[in-house]
Image 1 (cartoon, rainbow, N blue to C red):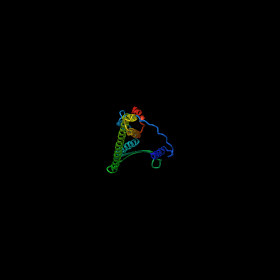
Image 2 (spheres, helix red, strand yellow):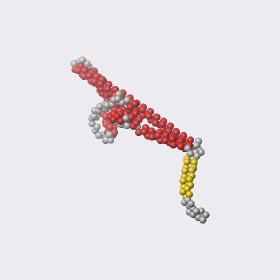
Image 3 (cartoon, rainbow, N blue to C red):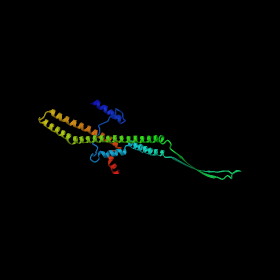
Image 4 (cartoon, helix red, strand yellow):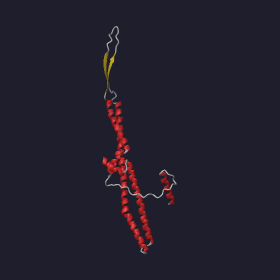
Length: 239
């Protein structure tokens, strides 16, 4: 156990950008981060994630670009008109008095390859739009699944924390205290005290494990949401 503790301390020092042999000291006691699952639904958090996800924003821009490209490709079927106006200066000569004149011209470029080149451009733009929309749909599904998974994981851990804090640990503490009192008057064996002590220790260890799972799930949710959990109230007010 001591060797495992030293290894864990070294790992934490590396994560903190410190020398692996630096002393860590006693860890601070941390409590459960407050979060109301009744107040903030899974769908509400999914909406925040969709609004803030940077990758999804880039995909939305790609979809808009593809839509504009497809719209522009439709103009390739239309003829191009060219209109020109020119003014020419002329010098007089023996057979011409050299009067200046104005000329105008109009031209039309017809899309003769309307069923080849223009069709290929439109087809390419349409495929690009379909690919962008499919990418957006897939990203939305992955994002929704991630929020669903993390939300469920955090809620489950939260319920387990409440169970340990409100029922299992207090009950084990009472059983241990009772067995100690009974042992002093020779009503129970010492093994009973040991078993109750072990039960309390296991409950406390499991409580810390689910507490770590809960905090990890909330931290992962914050990454997906693009904002700290404690700022959700401000975001809700600004929607």
